[in-house]
Amino acid sequence: KVREITVGLGYQEIMSPILTNKDFLYKKMSIEDAGTIEIEEYMSETYSVVRSWVLPNLMEVFSKNKHVEFPQKIFEEGLVNIRKNDEIIEYNRIAIASSHDEANYTDMRQVLDYIMKCFGLHYDIEEAEHNSFIDGRCGRAIVKGKKVAYLGEISPVVLSNWGLEMPVAALELNLSEMFEIIESRK
Image (cartoon, rainbow, N blue to C red):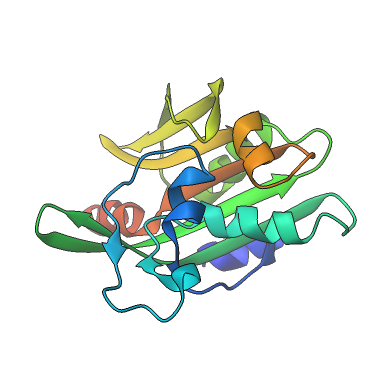
């Protein structure tokens, strides 16, 4: 249903491998390792870890499609895996991003508003710090005390790391936690 809603909002779905590399996940996104699961005997460094979030995949698509007409509006829904101590936790997430001259926080806030409204959820936003986003232009969505999403404008450093000149606004929503909240209401 979330994918159908996002398509209805004019976003095109992409599909990328769950395997990636630390350079894409962290260095290019200007953040620290968040508990990566590394492949012991990988065939290619390009696919040497399991992704811990989806947004870097969208940034890669934008970097390969700079020649395509703007606005570009894409999303991907899929699994991520995060190591917390000795435990591996799997989440289903959706990342949504828009790239055009005037891409901004409000774009992503409207997308999140609509998704939450479709599921009958109320959420609050608190200002957040996340090095992938511009300071003061990043928020954290909270539903019933659970932090379920980041949203905001991608920082110029990250845009430069991907070779992008056009602004990007994005969000990443933890669907596993969102659906857990929905199930608890039943």
